[in-house]
Image 1 (tube, one colour):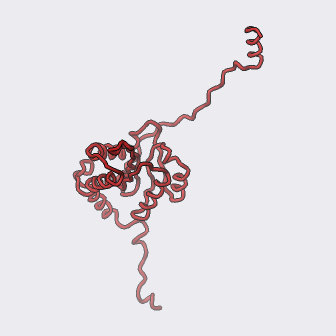
Image 2: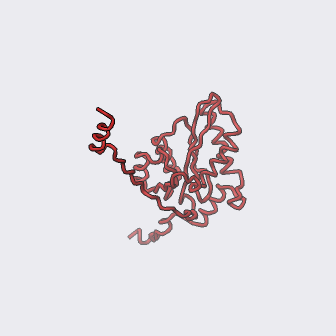
Length: 218
């Protein structure tokens, strides 16, 4: 078959038609989130990575309270899957309760079916930032930056247990000892206690009218 005949057949079969590009959904730009005003109203979480002395990589999941700047938790592991994320959130639920929402990026651990199902079952909104916009998750980005500068870059970790112990010690100092300029020179634990005292008991407590003793005897 000559080149010209081949070209005619190619065109007759419409093999040369250009494929139309797939339309992409346009994301609407979002404004800044309103500030969190009470403890456990909104958390933020994200990962930061490092290596052990033998060059094995590991990851740290940081979770912070956007209002009090508390480090709610740090989770250390060589692999942090959505299953492990859900187990951590369940432990936090039992220990201190859950927030109304958690700000996250679009990483696979946060978009996994297991994580989305957990959020729906527990009434927690996963507030996804726009792709490529880490500044929309500024609280945990700032926390992870401090974690890297003040802990990860200052130590050589022999193994995961060693890393977990040193990181947890740093977290304790961050929450209970170190003053924070963004909190007016107070420490996160102290600031959280002040806000809880001002806010009073959780919604629903204190609204029950005590039954008079005389009524209870009738």
